[in-house]
Length: 114
Length: 109
Image (cartoon, rainbow over all chains, first blue to last red; front, side, top):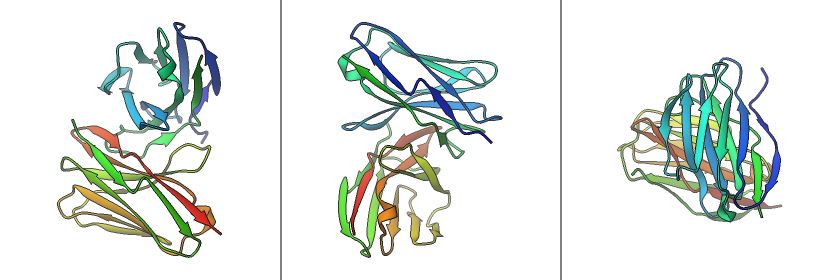
């Protein structure tokens, strides 16, 4: 089975711009979770989507949003980028959901905000 | 909200020495997962513990889940350079999975 894929792998944006990141889960997996990883804050949970519905949400401002399509692919959007948004954004897919199942992480998208 | 604390933050060991990382949750967990992230890589699932007092072994790695289901530990016996990376615990409570801050293990050959 192919693993979790994320595109793009690297991205450079400037403050105020917006960005969309994409995640394709393992075939058959219905849950996709997004995380922000920074050296100082570790792995911070953003949100989880399951069958096109947001099931859980972390403590991030409304500038961070996401969605999931009928084929389980998910996108994450960050509007009005700030310098502090520079991070590695990881998505993880699982069969039944983050709380009960093994999560398979993608390689991540490295976002740099200048 | 739920908090998961992990100590130590960093650990340097000589190859062949043992290593332990500890994970403590502010709330009772239904299960706990452990992940390893190699430098430059992404987290990879190691194991899930569900039962109170559960102990699981994977070769040189021993995982424990506390009796109260609020703490867990990962012990590596006789570390090798291939053990280098950051080890994360992730506790599940109320349908939310919360990651600890991770313990970065460095092994001197």
